[in-house]
Image 1: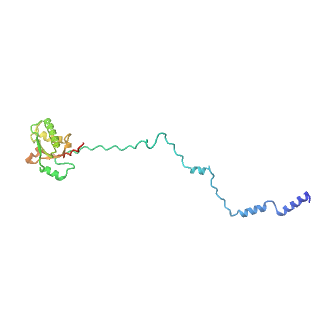
Image 2: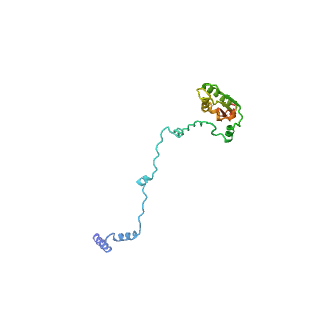
Length: 206
């Protein structure tokens, strides 16, 4: 068969089969009718992957390490409360039984000082020396006689008012636990029982 004949035969055959691709299209549609598309994972370097990357650590400041970091400031200690003022027949921290015995004059008086006839300046100096000396000796209960007297300058009435005030001042207050008026036969309101702090034993080497 020559070339012209062959072309005529191919044309007739294709005409009988229909247009090229019709059967292929129909077959493809039938095969892919129930097929669902697969979601592809984002490729490296996409925006979704960039969001999931951990944040870059901040660069450390040169020369700063935990050992050299500033220490946390501690709160300042509370200021010490001033000593409670002593008054007749009252004492903070002293048991009731001891206070009652002091008021009744049941504690043995180990020493006394009589300030009769002293000026205020003389009486103040003598009282300081007496209390400090007796506390150093280890005595517990002493009597201070102020006298009732008149209220003229330098008289017993002035000392009766001044002595309780002096007992609350430095250097005497640290040596005193309590004081109270004496019993009537020991001077009444013209005298005071003064209870001294116990002397702490000295520790060797201190």
